[in-house]
Image (cartoon, rainbow, N blue to C red; front, side, top):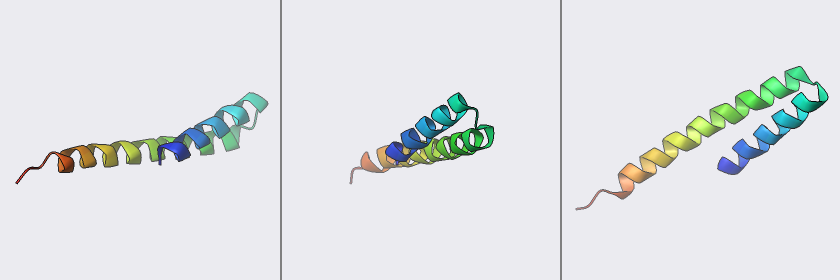
Length: 53
């Protein structure tokens, strides 16, 4: 999932460089959403991994 975040971030940066504002904002929005989903899943996996019986 982190790979997709980086891919959309790179797409957003390239689109912004060439002046495609709509594409850049869309890709940046997707990258931002995927980053937060990845972060939440990472935190949940850390918490669930530390449970001991």
